[in-house]
Amino acid sequence: LQFPISNFHFSFPAPMLPSLNTLKLPDPWQHRAVNHLRAGSDVVVSAPTGAGKTYIFELLHQSGHYKHQGQAVYTVPTRALANDKYAEWKDAKWDVGIATGDVSENVHAPVLVATLETQIERLVRGEGPALLVIDEYQMIADASRGSHYEGAIALAPADTRLLLLSGSVANPEDLAAWLRHLGRPAEVVATRERPVPLEDIPDVALPQRMARHFDSYWPKLAASVLLADLAPLLIFAPRRKEAESIARKLAAELPPGDPLQLTPEQRAVCGKELSQLLEHRIAYHHSGLSYAARAGVIEPLAKAGQLRVITATMGLAAGINFSVRSVHVAATAFHDGRSEHRLSSDELLQMFGRAGRRGLDERGSVITTRQSPSLADARPARLHRGSVLAWPLFLRVMKHAAATGDSPFTAAETFAARLYAKVPPPLGLEDLPHGGSHSPSAEQPATAARWRGRGALAQR
Image (cartoon, rainbow, N blue to C red):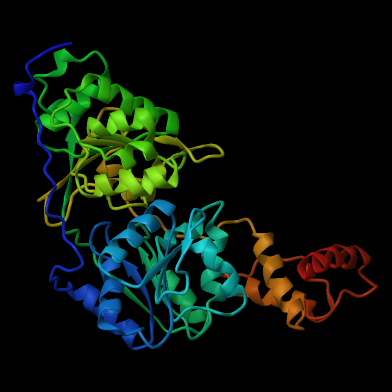
């Protein structure tokens, strides 16, 4: 298919993105959070995506508040976000390390960016950092990883300050009440103001004059977004396969515009097919890509605004701060790696929150169709802990207690009582003498046998 490129030409110079070296004045709510932390309180922050929650931590670091107090650990839910923050702070000349499932470098640095699971063992040992930041703490409700988030907070030593960040929790006061129940001073800092407001834009309201040049839906949609000057566009696809398929269709049918020049090193990392997509300023992003391709090529290009369209799985919703002007969610059901599930209102809030670039856009756009979700479907959700007990974490707590000469059963009960629940979950210790503080007696053979097995596991 041929038609005049002059009628459909898009230029993407590198935007002047804000950096840590740019003078920024904190908003009043950010200033309050910093003051509470300096005063020795834990802080629960509730602010929309893009409002500047991370800047609270950056202000603390730049002030040198924790310089002589110990390590500050900034935990994130995804490796993509860890890569992003590590690269950003390293570029700012911070002494920073990283610890994820992919990479571990400079882990004793004053600032450590990490996925939360990498920090559990030190917390079990009672060796918390001076400051522990838990970004996206709504992960407490996650079916598979929530126990680690809940456990990290429950295990944090009294002299470790906590900074909990989220933009999708409707009841942050309940989290602060839980912290106070644990004997920790805690304050809530909340704002509803989003620096870049969001708006719904139906696909039928976009320019349609190029639609006749395309055979399939996705190139039509992307072309309309480009003509409306709403690019870069981020499309959330339900599976890896769909993310890759959409990207291929876009690269095959959209005019190339200004081609992106890749270095030989970038080509070697990405391979032939992905390199060809990137040359068209189009990319897909999911956890199946290599670390080098994700963190070394795609994420920096996307953050710099050098890509026209990015297709990603929903794992990116709470991830890297891509530089995009508009977002489209392609389906209401996604595959989380194990099963299909419908998007919740708070997950949509996270996904739509990727749209709009502070300092670059006056508004962010959510591109909608008749079938796709819209802003009306996105809102914070009340946070509840998961219903399943994570026995591996309990066994780690019990193993540490046994190794230090304490009762594993007492340690398990104490840990259960510190979880985010009004009533501690039952552990099967109710029939034991003194509430489980001692070994099971001969009068309860079934219970004794069960806990001898768990006790043996705990001491391995």
